[in-house]
Length: 518
Image (cartoon, rainbow, N blue to C red):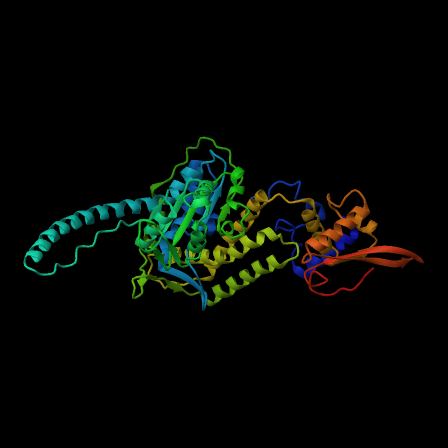
């Protein structure tokens, strides 16, 4: 890198305290590191096990070592399961009118044979155990109900013979659910109506979940996608069924979603729709680990710690309104926690506003803002569950949620890189943004000079080809790249020049018009 670029980089670092961002969300110390077309997926960030609840960490480490899988194969499903245990009992209140639940939609991206299924079983085991206990409770309640029905039939006949009205019949019991697997939206709505706390929906393959989403609708159209969009935000849902005279109305449905998908079929989730369904999924996409025999084991102590946490969260009381609908109790943030949360939300938004930020990431980033709050809620309740302390989100909860958020930001980039194959113009735009950042936000000189200084594999074979591409970029990405061309005189001779600058409404990277230095 030449001396002028070194000076520009030093100036940027002095003003911002860090190197400029590159196209993959990290930072660069030389423009030579930016090559997003030929480069493989962005490097996978390691999962921050220490950011998980204390009662989860031993099991994550032991299961990962014993199974031979990345720790996130256990940890991400844990977040879904713990969130479903909290369900409609609690929300986090960011401010008046903005609350978030603990619902998590999550997917593990891995090829067959990478041990995602045994890892998932470890994470969902407490919910399965709770399901078994609920089934036994239902069996006993059903026996009692059947006995009540026999007595009722006798009483009804006696009342009829006496010319009197019979009492109301006994109410049949409802089986409690914690986990639902293979189900249609109509059946799921029925389960949610009978289980106001909420449930976890576990799908072995999310590609199959997506393909089955509309298969029961005439012409392949239906409202299944809308159901899942609403369920993510715990919004009102109404589901019509032919077998019922009235629709199933769910004012406050709660469903966590957990599944896996192979890298090669990731594009099936997108389906080129821009309704935001894909953006609502937290992905983990680690590098595969070589699998070898291990003598490591999962200890009963680690299993019991995690199970006790799940049961404590599931035991949180749920308030109800006058109609029997759940009313979540909102958790407040401490003063320090609120300040830290606001700072990180603003940082996330600022990142989205940068001229080099890829447009295809804006959807996932907008949902990460909500997920940041949801992770804070889960971590805070996991810390206080079963303890005689006040429920409140503390700064440490927000700090740990930030570590998790950084991880999911990185893996969202990996997934979108796999989903979207970009053309050379898009990469040239990113290369230009990096170049301009290193040169004070603006360049004005002959195109041959730009052609020589710009480090990009996509600038074309000749300077005049670069000029054409700059004009196209200015039309395609006006919010990222500004372009002008014209004539000036140099050494008494007319010269054609080009001027490019960051097109985000300012002339320099720090919002200061630096003027024309050439």
